[in-house]
Length: 482
Image (cartoon, rainbow, N blue to C red; front, side):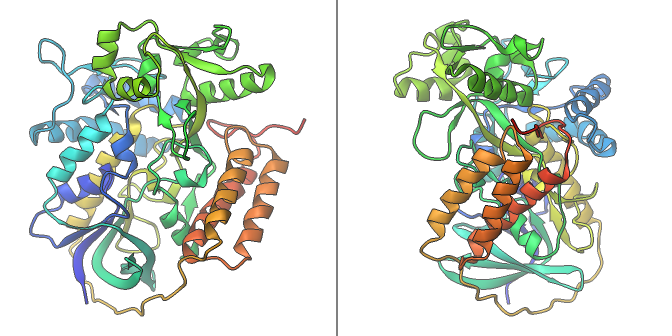
């Protein structure tokens, strides 16, 4: 019987930082579904927001609450902000290097809906990649890659471990504590910016286990995504571009965003996404990101990956404008947790990062608070584990031998992606949501594998949550039928 002190499901910023904070003498296992770089952290272009000092804490809290549109848990937001400097200083003390100015000072930048410059970057537009590589290099614990969790071993309100599917073989792994840090729901959508393997498995598994999901209707769509590419994962064009002067215009060069919000390009991302969606529908015109305000040398230095990737596609950026569209980006809701990152009613089970609903984001996430949330709540979870010294008796569980997939599941996954994009994305209607629900229920009644069932159960929770919130708020926009 494989026994660990802690099993961590996922190897993004939250999972890896939790591993970093667990002492080397603890027996810890990280479980990673694919190659280590295939996680949302790796693709994160934006930076890490923080309260720069004590004086900035009330302002950071205020900005986060304002973006959350009245649905944030104020205690959770205070915890996030009050511990933000500590998390950043810990990274720096351990050798991580954020971008600095010519004098060697930390280089703070501003993004939409922040009241001041408080966002740190690394490698220009590659913060997530740099942070992920750093955390991997500081991981002293074992990692199981190319394996996915397909069951949680729960009995009498207590978690004893997980079942993994490893090269088509299923077996159980046991632990005193389990941390879920598996990320969001990107692969439920036809267009998204997430890593390809972010497919909402753990959320669906929690539904099967009777674990509460929370705020699932709150899904953030990034407004500036280059979608003229094959595959569901699209190239994100970071908000920092707009924060530093890039503009959004139609094919005639008109900057139309001011018709929807006086802040124009600097409005929160949900407003910009909805504005583009409505304008394209009303005008029939294509929409572009214009970056001509940047000097090429600066642009190449500040946004090296965007520069390289768009140049490879034939766009002479920053001179050429680039066609854009919104795409799914971030799951605000997730597995309900308390202020200690614990999953209520299941002892020894935690959820952190994008998979969790800590309620710090409310109805809309403030830009660059996501990497910060992963760091802060990873530390919160580890602190709770280390300070809970109760003895635990292990139980053995039979291995679930459910069929994981059938031949037709791939076409059904694509059908799900399409209906989620068409009916459960930026602007929703009651009829559209009910159509999606009917399709999802029909698919659930067909002969399907367990992995597709996870996706469908998560998608159904999103649709039901959207139907249950009849008023538009934050990223959830529901409108009357035409």
